[in-house]
Length: 278
Image 1 (cartoon, rainbow, N blue to C red):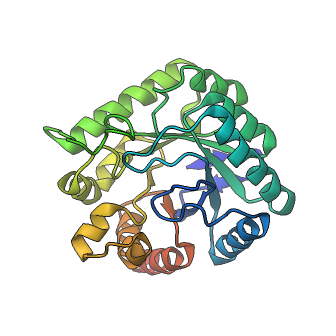
Image 2: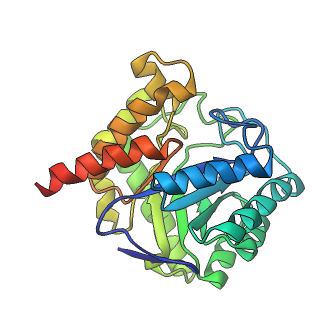
Image 3: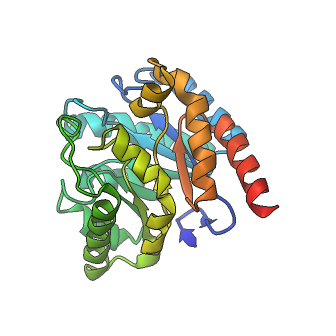
């Protein structure tokens, strides 16, 4: 599984790659408002890269449950300078976490390599033509509903098969419109329109999602269900639980693991891969 970007070729077949989360938002559920200066941003980026991040995921709009929408202008103001700053210092692959095609366009022009669309192309009809035009990797994530309402009453008859079917549908749609299959990464969307039982079922059956034939991304870091299981109310207290799930994901063939704490994740993945290869 090779994912080619403008700066790198990521060989996802040898080991899981770590995607470090860079939130340039004032209201993220986990670390909002902490990167309000260039120095703070560069310090976090430096630490993540030294700790083993292969990709940096830059987001300018919080997707926590109930989060308010952010205007195009405000999202651009947050993410474009951040990407330009990082790119002046590092060549590490960058993904732009957005549902807006214009944000993606300007982010790619500023040095981003990958588009991470949590809406699976549903929110902006211009997103897919843009990604096809630019020939860049695209992350398609499953979400039931929208961030403002997705956790009110999520329901599935069979969460794994239904998510797989929807991801397959969006995968087929994207390839029908001209996006190369080897540019697509799939994400089952942990915590996006899922309750505790749904999340656990997805994690138990991660290997099933790899049958769709695209690299799989998992974004479970610090999420509420971990706190529910471990009685950890603060998001930053959930890093060890996140690391355990990261190791289990690595053993089930997940290709990209999206996290806040890169160092712990690196340790967890290293141990998991040693066990798998023993």
